[in-house]
Length: 253
Length: 196
Image (cartoon, rainbow over all chains, first blue to last red; front, side, top):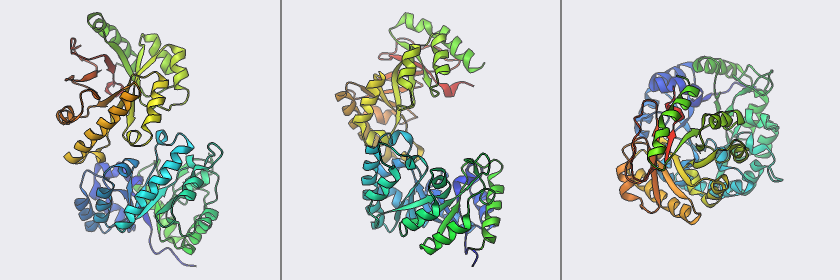
């Protein structure tokens, strides 16, 4: 057994703080002990070189650059260039809004789009990742959209950022899924599930998800990047990420 | 002034517009439960612009309370993929206008983005025309000059706070002096975000 050699953070967890003070917040994140982050390319109003300069000053690395679906349709290469300026390894689609996935046909089309975007990303030295929620784990027209995406995307071009909370919320076992998709899951989002009410989101380490098993399996399957994430912390985001870091840092995996 | 008072008094004040020109006074709706729709209908509104084309039960809910969705606001991804399906859904909802209601800041970081968006809107306008709808763009700022210049007048209309050429709709906010006689304005929409 060993300790994690690093813990990453999804900057969305401290978005309120970032909007008030981008550099100051990132400095606090680094001071807690986080070393790498998953963040939208344009998380602040700075351009990519200026954002990179801030990251360098505070001692953080952006390993995963997040994008919205809008980026996939127009200017994709410009987003990839910006992600490279940030120093990212992964370019991660954070979400597919509900209006863009009203039928199973949408998921078939999205899988084809992900393949195209993944191929261009690969040429730019980046790995395209798709971040799951629970909606795509619910059966639609006799199929499970998540499985459609897994089945119809090229394993060499499209990888996954597994959100372990949404996996559990959608009725799947993250450990089983990590083994099933070994080699295709590149990064993890870590947030916890409340004991009661059972579906609520809570800070990593304060809920009922077994992160030790998940992280052991992740490491066994070659995953090296995991990010603490909490969509809407009940208190200050900085306190939530401090608590999550303390928990993960002492965990034997 | 709360929302209910604002909607009611605005409606009363601006009814004069309808006496002066053939335009409708509507309201932007972002909650689609029957209580909200029913309350708006009871105030006297008949025309709404909706922000969720696929809100469950929306069509039936509007019909039950006697409201008509003259326009729907959509995001840009719906213009790139499956636009014919989305136009069909807007038609089924009873809309006359299919409107790009928002362009995210990261989609419009440079002037090149606006040029590309103008081309996108021309394509969307053509698809909308074939489907029997009009395509609209909700103006966000000074890009209006570029949009007027680079979009086809036969394919792209506009809505926003200050009426200009090719505007089919304008916003109504608290304290607005009703502007009448603006050529082409068919709808006045009370904007929720402007209500304190």
